[in-house]
Image (cartoon, rainbow, N blue to C red; front, side, top):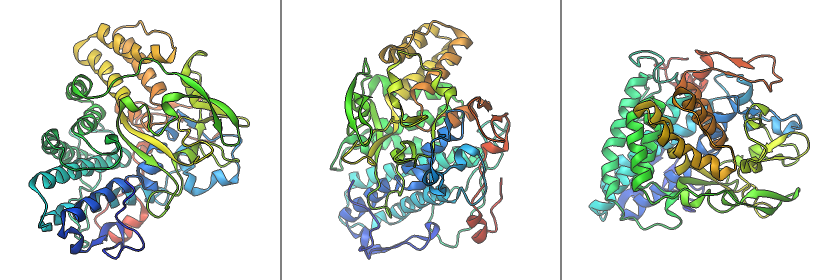
Length: 478
């Protein structure tokens, strides 16, 4: 994972623009070069505008989970701390980094797919696995884009409302128009459905580091489960969730435990042990990234941990009392939040503490999400309240929270609330609200506007960056 595709000293690539990143054919002459390029794609997922910072932060800050901390100083108000995510002061300039970074990932994947056959020594098994991983990651990048830059899947009955451009080539002359949301998801599911069977029997690439830093068959199925879930195809989401839960190599930890850790500048603080290491709940980790501030040209200049923890007033986003009040006094997960001066800040990602406080693992998807997904789907699809309660209470029990006893529609609401608490600050809340076709109320709000957001709302389809219009006459704005 330390190997990256574009370094200043590497002459094999010349990055002109995200849409026109040009690859030298010499990189793809060998299997080693192809794998070098694939490692670069995994590293590019950690770009500031993509999963390095913006996308997962936006998922909570733009909903009723977050707020601007009252103890924030000027450094935490800088534009690179994305304060607009909470204020919902959306314009075509603020959203440019996420759009360009996600399409950079897509463009780099397209380069690999277009050039992989140049590698004279590549085996069929490696070619097939690289191609499958690339197609899953390309689908995932399109999925993230359409989640933010379009209305929810069922906003129109035939899904004909505007989505994002489907990009499958590196042609620098391409001026793509926005495809309909239905067409974008048709492309996404075709990519996933064709790539996943290949990954089921693929294990030919030797890699350094833990398996959860790379795509596996089960990671791809888990991603597809999330995609089905967010288009409200609950039977399909349930089928994929069952595959991961029943057949995958993951185990749900039975209890969250805590210990005292030395935290930079704050002395000893109590943290959840399974969130304080080099992995996030390792036995449950399906796919995760390791985000840091090193080599800012390649990864990010603001890591997740630097956005949330104060670091002398630099924090841009904190937990709202609307969310904090949902946790019972004995809930172990309250150790995800610590008061630094005035407000509780998010310490769900304590990182390396004093040694490397800006380094932290970040879960793209973990088993807990699949368990909560299955619980909700079991009620919706099979009216199986007993089974759903057993599932969700595995999560409440290990946190020391009260058992859920409801049934039917009330149980669905309780599962949604538990999902909000357990998956807080993992970037899901905004997209859950869109899936459920709901607005939200921020009772803990000090803004002049956007304390109450009703559904439907233009704020759920973010503006396309202005720079895209500067070079693309076929683009339409939200």
